[in-house]
Image (cartoon, rainbow, N blue to C red):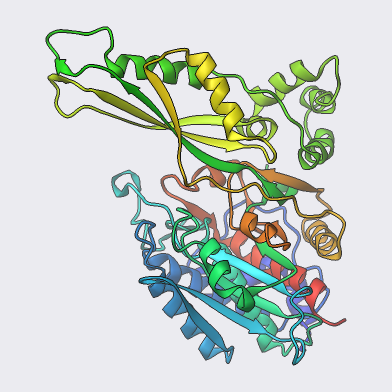
Length: 488
């Protein structure tokens, strides 16, 4: 395996940004007090690799994989072409009609040992867009002011291109592996339907079975141009949709009725929107706030340290929750009304009105108990609750006491100037839950330094990723994988 030259290491991130078509077009945004390459296991020519990966990311964004319908087969075909060009054997797996996943494996020995294998996971589908509210074409992979714009730029095609870059780097370097490294590009993560990783596991587990996985879900938190901390997802909340249904008597809108379903539904949603759910500190959330408290200002840090105390815990939770919506979601079950539907004409009182509640449960909490609490709060016989069948499953957290988590922590701290690395329970759901249910120690980390504004655009308008952060993320993930899977 060829070593990264001392010259390249000395040039660091600035030199890497000059590589490839993207770097030649733009100057990096001023978001880095980030250290450059830290040395460590050699991974081949990173300059050429990052140049190639930038092109792959642009091309993948240009493939519209909005889910529904997904259209992942076109992205699969592109990825298969890249792998074939690199001499990496890969398979296209049929998950559902018109929807395929890709699996490729670099072997460490003739006989596979699934308990040791490392899975690099990323999904190909993206959420929908309202093109009228974007300043650029969401599927043109536009470069502007040091950012790459496009749906999936963060979620999750940057991770997809990075995983592709890492397995290609290992192949190019002819790395001697101590475990199999498996690349998998999945379908239907955003909808979790009949082409999701659940179906992939049911049909093809023998092809992707692994003891460890690296996936999306954690963050490299960038503030003031410096990495404040790295959050590694080891657990996640459970998504459940509940429909609130109000029924009454339909009739002519010129004659108002007391049982108008729209009125009763509106009152119910207002009560639910202000509902206070109890605080429940899971072990990972407790560790997260313990590590974060010294990094915050004195006042917030004080209340973070008080979250688990009997006398001040309740007030502390209010202060912390009000300070940051993500922290609020980590502390309790959350309920977000997301969709409303009623009526057929402006002059008709409908017989029925509906609202969707997107609920995120803490692992271990049950939807039945929360629905009962909502029923008591609403206290209206015209209003009923229906739990939908698309609920996620609660999975056990990944261990914080194994070599892979230790290597992630070690490399992240080295690559980001000694920034603290904290375990994280994400409010969002990922494919890792299904993997954890199959005894895979799965960890989530977008290895790209991102600001709060960058993350806010994910699933929103003008989603984008700093080119410099994408390049840095490739280097970080490559070194994590090399630390864990390459013979030293």
